[in-house]
Length: 476
Image (cartoon, rainbow, N blue to C red):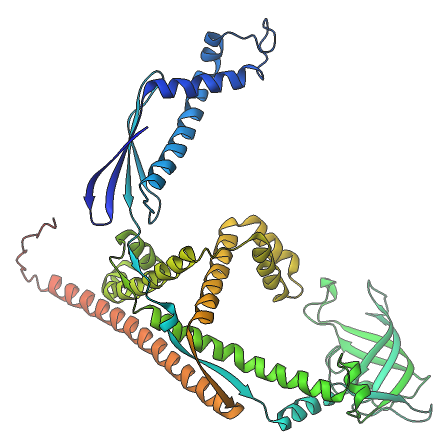
């Protein structure tokens, strides 16, 4: 294989690859020997089919397979040997090829630019720890207790009232006829929450243990038996028990029911939980600070093809006129994003950071847990969409690189109160909203200018105003 680098223009270059016909014929011979032992043709013993017969039967397919393999192997080797990292898919132009011929082709490549990685130890960022007042943990525990009331049985002569827990069996009919799913056993309702059928539990106020009660309710829009939707059903309810709520005692037993060792341990866990809630948001601010610092690193040149790809993503859903008006703004955003991406990738490569299969699967499982009840759908999505898995791998890779930088950089550690954390996050949200508003206003301005241009053009057409065409300036 002979490789020459031609037409060097900035990041663009042509890689000419030449493979002589002798080498190509060796690859062809190897392939014919490989298939010789697997082909069964009438009149020939396995492994004894003559080369000419194989060539007549499979020659075209064999050559195409060999060509694909040689192109893949030689192009990869040519780029690696010349230390060329392509920014995107190279374009391949076959010059000469064919059976018993030399192979010559040109790879048109846009190369990744040189990235100057400064000492990441010099990067500075704020790292926040939120100090939680013990009163905040107590307040959160009281809220948990309020939402997890205890109930105690009452005697048979005590009637139910709002907030009581009523347990009952029922059978239901529509127009005096039973239907599928019309029975329920040990059904529990907290009266007043109206969580079963609209107005159902209010009709159970005043019932006693052992009593029977007819309750009427309209079957909802999402009822499985479609022919019964919006029809009135009668529920014959047999009251099994009536329980009154009692104040939950916040003590060690309460804490143990929540998985803590004791009440003090629960307070520690709740404090950590509140801290983590703020820390996740504050960590995003730290990440943005690091990314801003990374933007100061030097990149020799941003590849045009990557800019164009990013602009396409940014301008999705816009018409051609709006895209043209917004191009300059999108170009700046695209360059910034690509620059940061190239720098992070260089940090990853220099420090041998990668994502293994175990880490990738852990992230998939994390995504699945975020959508309870739709686990199978999410799993199927990732199994059927390799591009989604690749995107997920990219996210994990970036997070690992940022974590690495964070460990090496200079952290300005700050312990702040919950109120200070809320103030910082509110200010950050305000800035984000301002940026979104400015972007939205830019788009509105583009649309307004586009409409104005169209109106002016229409008006000019009606008045038959003659506009002299300017000469086109050719871009060289």
